[in-house]
Picture 1 (cartoon, rainbow, N blue to C red):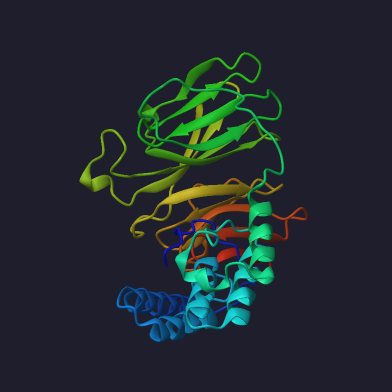
Picture 2: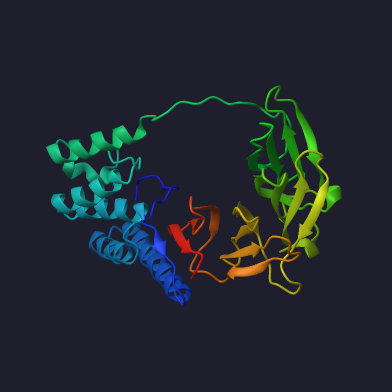
Length: 321
């Protein structure tokens, strides 16, 4: 438990089927409860209870790196070096960077060849695998920049602001920044965006959050998808879920070759679809077996959606079923 909280979680993809949502949510809840019990036991120095609760959490969620890392420490505290190294090695193979070298829970392993071997693998995980440079900087305070998209035809970038409820356009050659759209269009906070180059449309998720300028209590839970002409910035359309729907937060979207738009909703923990030519969004997988779906993308053949979830990792959704 002395290790840093891990923010990046990797999971083996799950293939979704009907009726799995409640079972997944139940598993998630039981795993969280077991981890909370483990935290309490650790603080009370009840290390065997700590280990048993972590084993329960790992059995429920065997790919959650925070659980795995802490179970490794628990096994080390219990005097089980083989088990500790097994779990720590699994975390290292996931590509994680964890503070095992300085974590007092692993004191009993220090100096052993097995522990040093795992530490070397963790150190390798820290090494850069590529290089990069910032292509541009936006010198505008208070944006809370969220969505980013690029037009492959012009090379221009589009940057969305949650707070200022607008989209900026950054020239791909000169990197000059100018407003592309604003709250006067009815935009709420701007989140994920994508350019449909074939149709010349910029699609943007927009959701009401208290952090946006001009927020009103009655705005809470509103979310939609806006379409803009890429060249002119003209508003083409505003698209919302059916009236009477519960609160939504639309975070990201993906486009298929037919012009359909798929949208993640982190509040309903599901997926929506805006079909080509339609005015209103339809439920696609709402509720889904997710905890909080975020980014998504289509497979190369367009038959599957890959959905990133905060708690579960990466899902694969078969569009036909």
